[in-house]
Length: 276
Image 1 (spheres, helix red, strand yellow):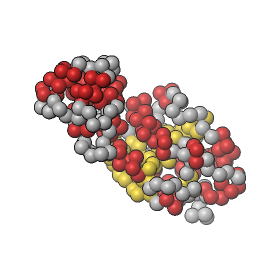
Image 2: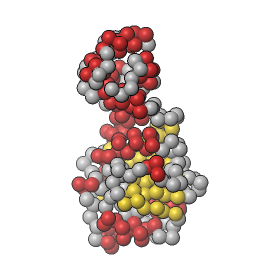
Image 3: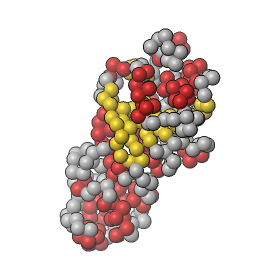
């Protein structure tokens, strides 16, 4: 690995620039660059693609993306990364670094618009990043994301399971799994205390509307309540919710976790939910 001109050498880069990962920012640098190549393949990145990367850090993944894609937008909040990121990305392609909090950057303003999202995500922002890129970046057709294994389980959880929740619904309304790889703790510096997974998702349709997303949030705001009571707490007429469920062929005593993702847009229409 060390002899390849296309390898960054993450450990050596950390040592050369005197950088230690900031675990408060969720930084766990990827040491195995074979997984970098795998992520690019799983996202099906080609020469015409524009890639969004959240948290490029030292630039290990960024440099590889830049050699494959047309443009890479890389959003990084840690200014300590500027020297190594500049070193790894200079001369390898069109890399555009945006310094700031990924949850505050206007993703819709990225030009050219991303068609792929490939990232080793800080665990604490993984779900919000996925949900927001689904909603704000309609041209993105594939994601390849490194995250906590349990987080990936929640994204893909089936109705009725203990992991099924609002994010499961929102994500599955717009995307389907396209691949998954277990990732050992030893390939990161520092080693995380949880298992990780590299997961690929393929877009299957547009993001759910703002009204549907609002309904899903309200439905799952309180677990173990019936949908009628959950939505009633958010301002809906409980009787109207029960009647709508019956019309849809669903028990009026159904709980949020009982409904498949596809039922939520129908329910929003049936009760004319406006996000109350």
